[in-house]
Length: 343
Image 1 (cartoon, rainbow, N blue to C red):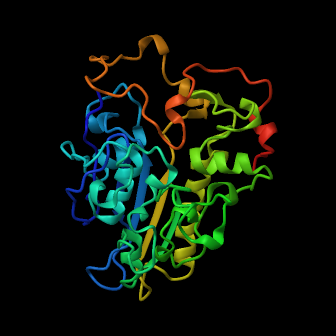
Image 2: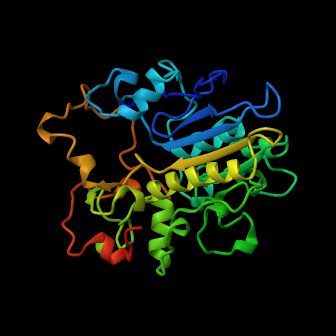
């Protein structure tokens, strides 16, 4: 059974820790104070959202079988704090994400309260049908309205969650902006995975990359247009996978801030958010990560029983609960079929 706890806001270089919890099977957030710009109280913030990151990894949480050396160095060796008793409002990714970004309970936002059977049930502003003047305040918008330079990339808000009701001029085409709070960003355009390195000509593949964060992903030709397997060893390297693109984009944005005088000297402080897709399903990642573990030595859950009363099939807009649980052998290279080339 999943532990309903998670790491919460981190205390790093003077940033006060928070008791606001995140969903164990949802999003873990890290707030990092990078410097002190114009006043002793005006700090720069880097917000890192990690989808479905369960706080059971590495030395940080006493699970050394799970290899997370970089996270362990951050939490334990460089002034970070890994919260061991942070609890959550709801252990589902979309509702927890909306809750932490609005500061409101899931029963208030009404995100996912009906089990996620409809795509709009994952929209952060669905309670008011995203009407102007009735929107909740969100974290990036609060920073933007209080003198911060704000920018974001990746899965911060749930992508494509508000397509049917939010920002009609974007139309039916998929984009993070269709599920975003566009009031919150004032520095450049919002970074979207497939547009960071190489946009896909095929809209289904573009949607899949931005929604699921994998190459290849659901609806790709490699999977014959189906939802595909729950896990797969991809030959697309880190820097070309969506999360790699997002990491590169975030580093570039930090460099641009420095170039433009943002976050230092007399410049305005910044709030920069990046949302990584993994370890949310599907687990389609570079082969090297699978090679770190011997399958026959991986520990099994001490209590494998299904909780009493749990519905056997939980409906989701993505269909992730229906992913096949076996790996398939693909006839073509994912990199070749996706048209990606090394930088």
